[in-house]
Length: 625
Image (cartoon, rainbow, N blue to C red; front, top):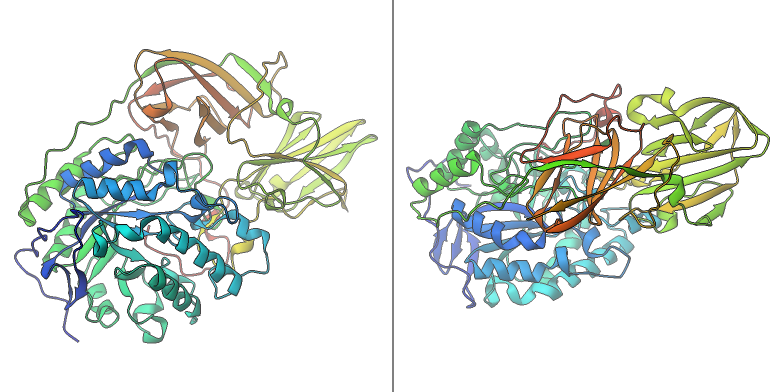
């Protein structure tokens, strides 16, 4: 086995070939990638469907090219493509065909990472919520039903883009099979073998997979023949020597060269790799002729409810990731440093970067109308049942579920809430009397009540994001949302629940109320704009909830985390009158207003008493993000 520890003064030049509508021969052999017989490096950057708006795809691709990259790697999330079982949607933010054509138009190669499991700190790692409606089916296993779902999904993706593979004149160079499977393989790779065969039936370009530090590198029995094995996080001689036998005749490829790390609520915004350290890392890879992908070129935003969760620790809304292109789409000092490095080391002359998109400030916006959340309930419950039903039982992917029980004679005794996934607001006659969350400790799930009748108990349960790492058949039960374990009063299990499904994709039916806010409340305001631009809403006046602007869900805010702003894309604003809704789950804000600024706002976080990402017995957790 040849050594990979060969430093060279100059990295392999990038191949002159570019996607031009003509078939090209792309190979992975002799420790190199080759295009039309010319050795080349892949110098890629990562961005994700759902975290960048489709209106910005062309700009991001042009920015990547101007930084000196020759390829873009895309995570495609199954849960966004197949939101309901058997119903695929490749339009809008999932229009993979359009994004590959934009790559071709801009002379950029493309790499696709469609999972089916991706991790990426996204909701359930990209696996659709509806798989949880079948509890007997093991996630990421060789279970025939799960394999059949995967086959249907991969075939649907290939149906959109098979003709855009490099072999047929398109920009698509490689496709990834699964993601970091070695973390959960536990000695069995039957599923990965089945999945590889599915990909081979649908794609003709080279296939690869990736792993961080897992047993796969030392045990040939854990590797699927013919797959290119990429090593996430490779940055030194020790790891390079470790992976040599697994790489074999294939080139070294590092699918994830990190710019930062993910940030959970209760934590500061992560800044893991300063620019100088990143440049040292990239120089090392170039010295060793290793191809790589910067993770990410552009991180973007976890809009709506699509953030993931590390064990029980939900990920914050910003996915800026200290990337070369910031959350607002502007190039950064990191971008300029990378561009200078690639220009010099690869002897290229990239085009000048396109102009940054506009980012604007907004004067104070008064949210002077409000309505209790309970006023938004439909006239009849979604379901009446003896036991509480889960969010999945309601065919609801995200948002909130409200569980109601009436007590004509009053409420007396200790209320105990079991497994409210994830955060519960306890209300009696519309007034908040408690907040239950695992991170607050077990005492938060116990509330002593003395309320004369008649009394109505409402438990509003908020899905903060399904587990994204480590997702396996052993951990999939953690992904169920709602009042999973039920509740008891004075030691007796409560039964007979009215359940209201509240997906809250957007706020509809708002009607201003004169009622004083005593529980979760929706606030509304309007503001004029002469010209749209991106902006960062300052959420420091607020506690916890969700924001919508012109009907678009910006994502979650929470005063526990370092992140205290929410990014509003320019495309979601408009010249003229704009509307904003804020759902505040905690107490009424001292000043119900927001402003807009030009930078992310960070404050010291308030850590949780319970360390949420270390609560369960340890599985290997990827150092990869």
